[in-house]
Length: 51
Image 1: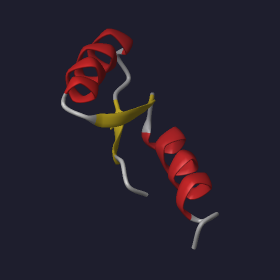
Image 2 (image 1 turned 180 degrees about the horizontal axis):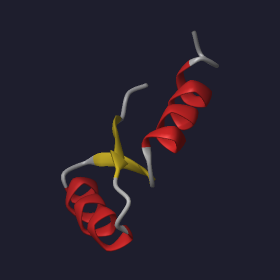
Image 3 (image 1 turned 180 degrees about the vertical axis):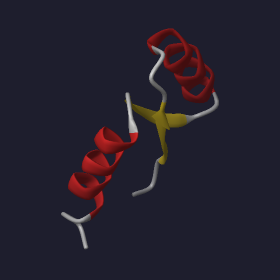
């Protein structure tokens, strides 16, 4: 994993979009989740597969 990545957890789509744009411009690979449940599911799929 050479790229910097970040997961935004935000239930307001417009806020997630703006924050994501700023972070993307700062060099992050951005993913978004609408709630904690979705975030945990995404993290499990992403990180448990490469352990």
